[in-house]
Image 1 (spheres, rainbow, N blue to C red):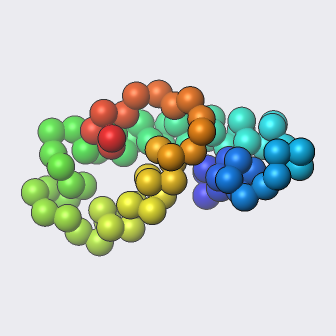
Image 2: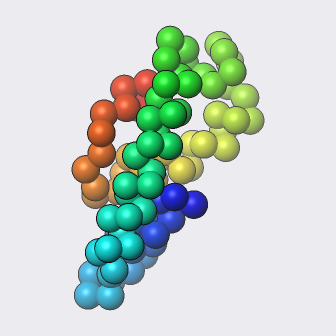
Length: 80
């Protein structure tokens, strides 16, 4: 939900109808959440250890969208 306004605004909305403030706020709300995920993945490939779980699978669409949106984002090497 944190990046929903950014996704909808940047991907699903025509440029002339975008709300830049809502998009920026959405991106800012997402940064700390990606940082939490990045720390959780430190030293491992999957969230719960050495094999994928439903937790990993559930994140794939959101992470894919996040990294494919045309926005600047802090480095998150473990998520990347």
